[in-house]
Image (cartoon, rainbow, N blue to C red; front, side):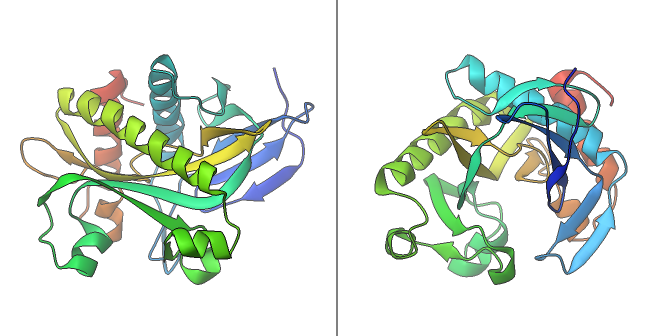
Length: 238
């Protein structure tokens, strides 16, 4: 069993620890919740356990369809063993339905389905609030090569195609989601997590929110929403 060594990084929802192998890390999922670039903070009870299980579930599902990820295996309720990647400083957002910042920016009513999926790229920088960037910004700041950006967009759309159909069969709309990628021996791998923290997930029949928007907007029943997603996808109750 791999053992945790020194902590390499602590983010809003996870901690990353070195292991005895230089090319492997252990990711520990926390219950901490933040919103609005850290201005709102709180705790979602057992979120770390649920997000750990959901990320394992989604990454295994995608691996079966040829999407390469950094996942090696789940170690415990809150820990994943993963390949150590160099995270690219870009967040890739795919949107199927207008919501959140897209609705505000373009004046689209929340819930309006887009004619086709929209891919957006954001500069991963907490101090700047993760701003939206275009190809010129990425080139000027040397955030990624054109080939890497093309690979990120292609992989993100492939993930969208696989997850949207799977989730809908479980009675869940995939409104939008954020992905992060890293480099491992020169190859681009899907990394980070896929959870209700990083996706907008709505009940397909009622449009009830089953994601972190319940925390952001003080809608209540936050834990219930995370449990519901886990149950519909895996049959587990935690």
